[in-house]
Length: 463
Ligand SMILES: *Cc1c(COP(=O)(O)O)cnc(C)c1O
Image (cartoon, rainbow, N blue to C red; front, side, top):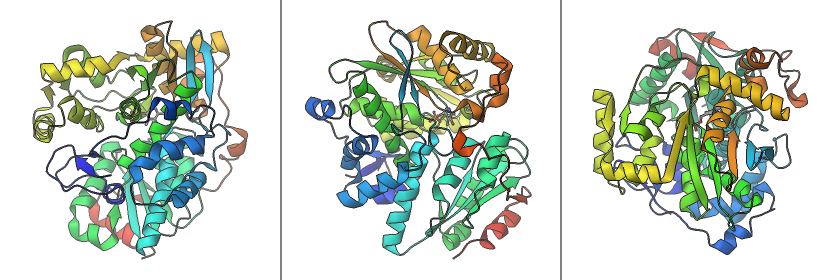
């Protein structure tokens, strides 16, 4: 299988090169040239299989020649071995035909573990075979960085440096980044905010001499392998609820559009998904896009669901490519307008295709808190604020005849302040990480200055 750029002018790549490259050289994102389609019988046969087996069958066609079946099975097994639930992504009923898909049983308690754990093992295998190594740098507002450090710790082909805004991540998020003891992972507290962290990472990638010297690589949410890993749980959930014999809908708390785009891929592979519902918090650029066809940035308003506080939703470009009939030049033009003029209007035909496939809704801060309280009262389940945004929108979008699955993207203990404010209960960490607050922390403070940052990296990599 070959991968093409959404902007149409970068070389086609194999799965392995797509994964190791990340962003395409024309500024676009890589997507498969054609999507594999599973037959009705192949989908029916997935029901009830172990998560790892479904993962193998769903992802195998995308891998091409990069790994043998045996290697790929071993990679998947290692990726999900540290999850705290045998089902990996269990379903829980919260109302008539309303379900939660719990994606927070991984090592850092958010759905990002599904993709990051896999990508850690994929990188390690591919690099080991090439006799090569890389330095991974990333910026985080919390969840991505902890998932990356957890996924790459102890892997000998990779050194990881995660930059987070000093003093601006939650204590659980910070400790998840600073307590792993392995020498190849580094939590970097940068003097500045999240935008400064992102800018620093971008500057390193644009400093080609440094980039080549340390073999810089990225694992941010535009990496195709991350999207691919997330396609799997749409299949496990839908087949558990009766697919392919009946349709299932999903409501997805959305920021960078990676998780919901994986649902779009699952549907194109033949999974009978009725609605894919985009749920946003008060940072509602995607909801506004569906309502009026204008994709226009505003300033980010910090919320109690911080992992969705986003105005530029990078993976939305992948959907644009599809709704513009895979016209890379048209996508490139729209993305230029987003950068230079802060927005663009979607063409009428593309908007119709967008609305055929997706619905949307938003939750204000008050509605998010009220939903945490309502679900707790009705079911005893405690939701994290991101999941609550999803549950609020799902309740509005639900059609009683079709199961509606809300993706539960994080464990409530990751966001204890918002939960306590809503229901007066401070959610505790799962037993397997109850000692997080006692573990020793290790972090490095860096100024917001490129030379110092690069020197800190070069002084720490194991070459
Ligand atoms: C990252 C994240 C999201 C948003 O997911 P996208 O793939 O960026 O749309 C939602 N909830 C939580 C808890 C997250 O960490």
